[in-house]
Image 1 (cartoon, rainbow, N blue to C red):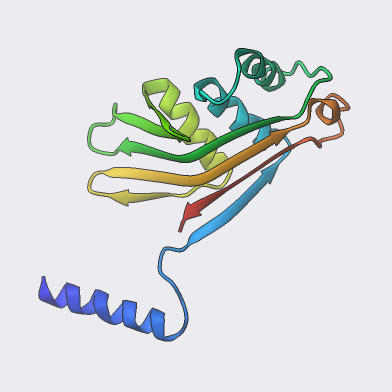
Image 2 (cartoon, one colour):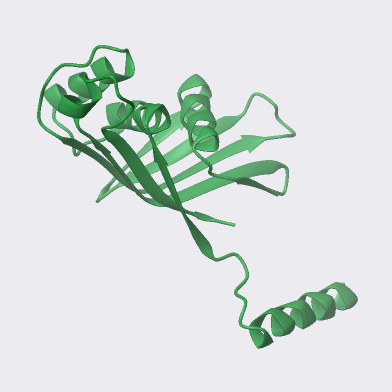
Length: 161
C-alpha cells in the first residue's frame, strides 16, 4: 500500500512541476440535435422551468417545432452512476439551484446515455461507472429550430477528465 501511495504522490508532484493539473474540469459544447436531446431529457425534471416551457421543449424533442421564445435549461450538476456489479442499478442525481432530483432505472439511463452521447465521460470507481457534469446550460431558439437548417440549439457543460 505504501508503494502505491508513494507512486501516486510522485506522479502528482511531476504533474504539478510541469504545470499540469490532474482531473481538471474540461469544457464541452454541443449543438444541433445533440443539444436538443440533452435539453429534452433534463427539462422534465427542472423546477426552474414552467409547465409551458417543459411542454415546448418536449415538443421540440419530439420533432414538433413552432415559433416561440428562447428557452434555457440549466443544472448546477448531474451525477450518474451505473453499477457494474448490480447490473440493474442505475441512478442520477440532478441539482438545480437549491433543488435536487434523484432518478433511477430507465429515466436515469436516458440522462446518462444522452450525456455520454454529448461527450461526458464516465470513470470507474468501486464497482460503478460515474459520470459527472457541472454548469449545464442549454439554449433553444424555436424560431431558428423550426427553419430546419440545423441551428438554434446549443449546450455547454464541464466534465471532470
